[in-house]
Length: 292
Length: 301
Image 1 (tube, rainbow over the protein chains, first blue to last red):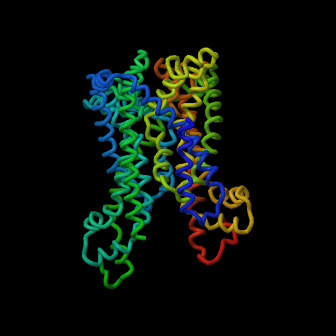
Image 2: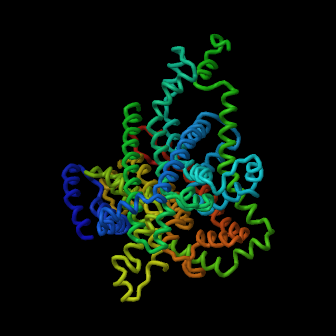
Image 3: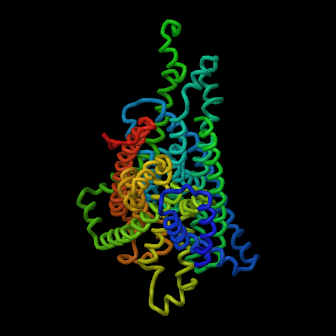
């Protein structure tokens, strides 16, 4: 613990040397507290995960993370998250577009409602979606006679993840679309471009980084999601069992080593995705920064 | 369209779509939102009231539900202030200064947001569980963290860690340092500057950060589920209580408890919208001021 905190002062002093003009007080205090709290709550606990993995042999680790049931869960988790993020990419862009460009009654309420998946506890979303899509539910009673079974299948997982990821694309694209300069579109129109050409060649390049950021965020969120999925998935081994549930299952059998190994794989993936998201956001800043 | 006669009309047509395209897009978007957002929300309340208000309130006053409510409130009352202090400190350090490794630090602050809640719960089991690092020591001192209230509080703090900082950093960056520097130059202390200059500027963002943290703390399921042990009446939070009732096929009771959380979500959305409109208005007021003139009137009319 002290190692992590004592690593801070060098970074601090280099910062101080550059900011000689700094007037505002409190830099050392706030940064020091930030690093301390971050270490205690996040970094040290997460490092426990890696230390636990190091006590395993490579064979133990490998067999834990590549068991057939675990591999099937990766396929479901990544496949469903990807599919849901793609749906959200299309519909998120559509919703953002409609909210920014058009006027219609109740727009402010719709705009506020988009954040519902952020605010609604995942377990509530899970049981509610299940109630809608189960054989006797509002939607399920019409869909199942048609042979469309959504609850307790992988399709149900996708639907839960669409719900969970919906706000990400809307909320990242919306502000960028609002700032887009109409003059460019007017210029393109006067040069004879069609509306579709303008969207494709003027607007889309401008919002592309934001769109990708939202997509990556929805995807990352989907991979880790647990609460909303387990109710609707049915949780059948090899078919509709997500990776976080594999961790819980191993934990309930006191297989701490196995649970930790799978958790490390998930943690590395979410860390990689976080770096991708940061790179995309830097791209966004660069793009909008040079334009304004 | 006779564009040459009505140049104004033509310019407008250049940046929007034909009416039928507009209405189709609006229609498709609204149907999508209706199916994926409004319908699940409505289902919570109709399922909860399926057997009338009597059964609804019965589920809420039941002792296990009460103890779940109390535990959820306790975890929230601890987690929110801790993350509030951190969020303000972190956004002050990140938004007001330039230093090496700043973007990496921002990434680390975001980390709990992308870690699966199940993994978050697991790390605390590895640290404080019976077989964990501190397990033997905790056991010999008769301290219980996992499958007890402290573990639930820790997991809640972890999953709600970044929300206030995430809300404040962009807001404070947009507002810049000018006002604070002026206050310092005029002789204010750091604390006075924060209290009288910064805080009034960020209050709406701060309010939304707090209310979002609050909603997430009360609604957290995955991480808390791993560390709680599901002991009825003792280590069950509201979302865990919902799960137990649902798995016992007590559908009405499960949705009745869930409706409390849904109401909380709706209140959160209302406060969010109000604070967003306020922030927009204040930022607009700042932007409209001529740059050379300091702000002498409060931004909000």
